[in-house]
Image 1 (tube, rainbow, N blue to C red):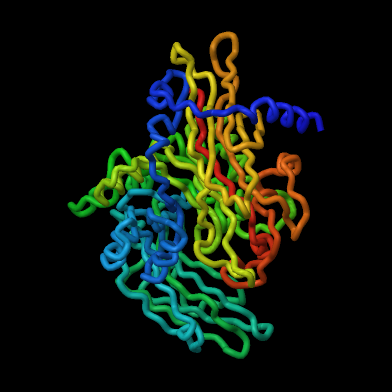
Image 2 (cartoon, one colour):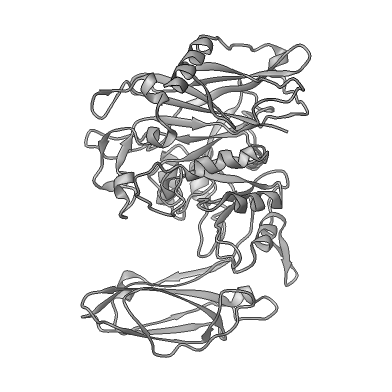
Length: 550
């Protein structure tokens, strides 16, 4: 209660401040040796709000692209895998129809022997891997016989290029069922070091369950045969996949700077001053991500919201439906910022097309050519000139999610460092707008520092004073801003007051709802954790990037 009274008092002191300082001095970007402001170059009166994706699968058909267009995305950076190759450029017919769409290369890299990591490389031309999955009709055949073609033969000079992963899933129909697997054209191997050969696979007995094998190829084809009794077992997955298969430092380097293979330059960032690496669904320990971030300044940051991985994050992995608040990614973000590192926060849907999570880039409103617009978008990612959004979902009367899905106009219109006559930073000024005046008339702004929530203001404008120690250093190691637009009620009429909002963490706010969905596009997952994902959210949430003490 003491903390709540303090926050309430601070809100009353600062909430009434009117922050409309648009004089030339305030509008001109300034720098100071002990402050890093990612928004310093943003012209808030003229910038465009470009809705973007940093980790989004699909987009490989015209229909899929149209769905994302209907959601309000105008910067497409799809990140598919198997193979991990950019979905770029977009089809000319789609671009001709939608001339306002900007695209960028991107792909999700994975399967590094020395790190359990998935990462995306915005603006990178790196392409790796292979992928081939059997159709449902093919899986119903018994015996199952299939030849995977177009493989690279294992070579000691580049061993990672000739190693493939075979995934098989067998489901029990009657107890005691066994399948026999035989593979020709490849030898089973370790997935460590130099991929040491183990043995050939011939009539290998497999019980019901999921099975993964790594093979080093001897031929450009891998022939797989699975003999089983359809009365006892059902095959629900059979696929041959390939990831990066190299140490993470090598893959980071290939994504950022490219490399020469057989005399041909491949990979690398398309634009030297834009884009970079995002660390996906960071379920592991802080020290690991410190190591990744320290590799290169073009390793930009971590995902703070991933719809597929319990929203603001669980350390237990995908589809965690345990009772505790899912805040692992969110807390990790601040833990990393407390170390003094620069770490941008990314907000994504991942595989959940109709979920929530997007990045809103702040780009110059200049009407530039598409190629220049692509560069500006990637520069915004590099500089941190964007904010994250986790928005309410649009639904019809039947409770079905409909276009524009999680699109929202709720946005920051000002994140500016106010300075005194001597150029010293004294406060951070913030303003928001664009909330739906009928559905979400209330607004709350929070300032978060290394000490936690430092100030809450129930208004669309606010100011946070930058306090300093006597020696001149700022008290706060970083400041970032969160803002929420919310309705008067939730749960079908229960009051939703400013006081109640102050007591909720961001995970709880993300779950506020008036109805649930039992299926369809709003039902984001068929996993055991579907309960977590079936609420139809009613709050718009936006998150700034941090302003850091340096």
